[in-house]
Each structure stands twice: as structure tokens, then as C-alpha cells.
Length: 379
Image (cartoon, rainbow, N blue to C red; front, side):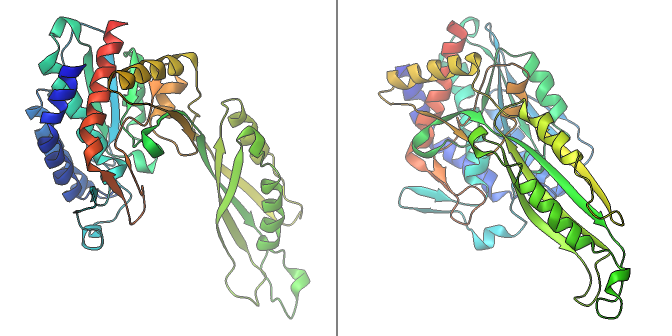
């Protein structure tokens, strides 16, 4: 373990260079050309790290990046993404700056620093551990995680099924804790189709879509069960044309979070079963749970214990926790493949203007990941 720690410390400068370069290549999920520019940089860094690199085509976004390092042990899949929530030009508002031991920039915490940590750990492992004793490592960097992983999910799940473990390079929880559970996520659209009329002259001739939607929203809110980790949030409402017109149409977007896999079909059925209270209004529900929850299974717990043992060898304490956000680790854990999330950078501000990583923790995080991969190969 000491050799891996020392090697990662020596890689600190190169690791920071990778982080800075990737962040400088802005890569909004919806900008294919920008994503490709970032992917080209990533491919170059992965090749320099000794990986064999290929691309996986995607219809609506830039091709995903796959890097592989040989080994004689079990296959381990590292998962991350290079798309971000930030629009092109965000660097003007959020320049890459170093301040108080932190490095700031759009997408740095979520999660370009995680990709740099992953490739650094794989490079160090290949250099320090004989091939016969180290795992076969695959790093899959996708281009559409922030918009639902529509084009990458099949590839993620295919490679996960071939792997003994999946290690997700998303950022850590506060204090460096890894994530052993995540909520599943769904999005639904409620749409009411009413009958328009003049609100003053003949209101009875109309049937308000907005009034119907308001009643349905109350039914949606009643489905919340925080004790089970089941939450529904009506986040967007749209409808009507003018205040003196009985609304002909109204819609709402609902975010759903589930902690338990068994709750996903239940909430889907409950929402699908909503019926209009006004017979003159047609009511529709579309959508579904698109990311299953990542539950803390025995396989997840075992990976955490291995990671905690590595941290102890480093003289550190590694905590675990759960989060309401989702990642591509939700997909792999739902397949029954042991998955550990939050192995990326320490910092704060995902999707926020103060997004940053803690510089001094980058190399130790790479050492933790390298040590965990080595320990998986031993067990």
C-alpha cells in the first residue's frame, strides 16, 4: 500500500494537469461538438496512462470513451461521465482558479476530477503491481449521465455484468465518505385537457384544466412517505393563456425519489391510476422511474469494508452514507453487481457556482482507489 501511496503522490502534478485541462474543455450534455472536444482530450490522457482506448457510438451525443488496462485478476469497472450541467461560456462566470487549497471550475467536482482520479489510480496500479496480480480494469466515461444516460445505459449494464465490482467515480460525500445507497429517480408529466371559455361572460361553459391539475397535485402530494424514503415533488407547472380565459390545458412535472426498489412500481401504478374529477376534463399521466435505487446489499457492504480497510492502511477513517441523488451506479447495483459509489473527489458545489475540489485530497483519493482495486484482486 505504501508504494501505491507514494506513486500517487508523485502523480499529483500530472493529475492536476488532467483536471485543469478537462475542466477547460466545457462539455454541456446537449452540445455534441463540445463533448467531442472534451472526449478527445480524455482519450489522449487515457492513452498516456497506458490504456487501450476505444469509443462507443451514441446516436444523440458524442461517443462514449472506454479505456482498458490488462491484468490477471477479476474485471473491475470504473464508471464516470464527462458531460456537465453547465452551458458553454460558463467559464467566463466560473473561471478555473486556485484559492485556499481549492480548485474551482464548472464540472470539476461533478465529475471531471473523478475521471482524473480514476485514470491516475489505474496508471499507478499498472506500474506498481505485476500484471498477474492486478485486476483487469475498464474505465467507462459517458457523455450523457446528466440527462438520464439514455444512450449509455446499455453499455454500462453490459460491462457491469462482465465485472466482479463496479466503482463509481462520482464525488464523495462530506468528509470523503463513500456512497453505499442512492435513491432511484423518476419523472412524470401530468397533463389536463379542459374546455376554454370566457371567464367573465360564460365561465360555466368551460372546464378548467388548471383547476383539475390543482386537485391532482394534492393527490400527488398525498403519496409522499418520507419514512420510507419515498418523495414526490411537483417542480414545474405550466398552463392557461390569460387570467380571463378558463384554461384549456395545464401540465406539471413531478420528480419522484424511491429508496426501495419495490416502491418504484407502486408509485408508478398510483400515478397512472389518477383520474380526472371533472368528467369534462381529460387527464393524462406519462413518464416513469428511469433509475432504480442503489440499495445497500451485502455485495455493496463488502466493497465498503474493503475500502475501509484500505483507508485504515493509509491512516484514515472512511465513512459511508446515502444520498437522494442518483448516478450510473444505480443501474449497476440494480443488476446485483457489487457497486461502491462516491470514490471521486472531495469538495463541494455540484451544479452550483462555488463548485470546487480540495487539491490536497486528489492524490490520496487516487491511492484509495488503487488500493481498493488491488484488494479486490486479492480477495
